[in-house]
Length: 123
Image (cartoon, rainbow, N blue to C red; front, side, top):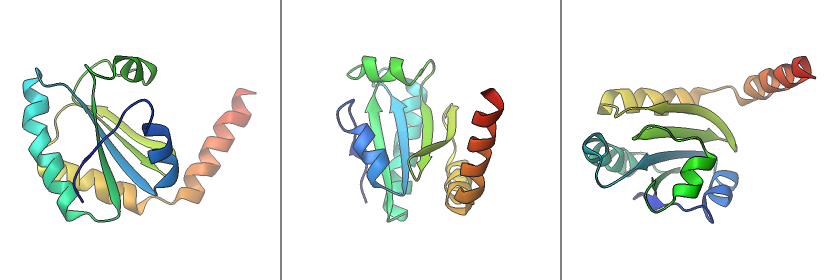
């Protein structure tokens, strides 16, 4: 599956309607982004059933600000609509594969339980 261009209008539905979504926040002028782009694209070809989205932070400044993107590239991973990974920096291919495996292997019942416990503790 090739990468998908995401915008402020499409990212919410994409995250909500798919089990796993990886999002690469990038810009054309960013050398580390250009280095990570092909690695992200290759991973998208290997992992069917995962949505690999790209957000051009220059074109989507409002979305980048809303999601507090302060450094690019930044990789976010969502599982069942929940943000489970958020890290700036270009990853080498083996590290991206580790992130993908970790996201796939998450016990989402446990993740939801931890979120619930944190929210209860805040209240």
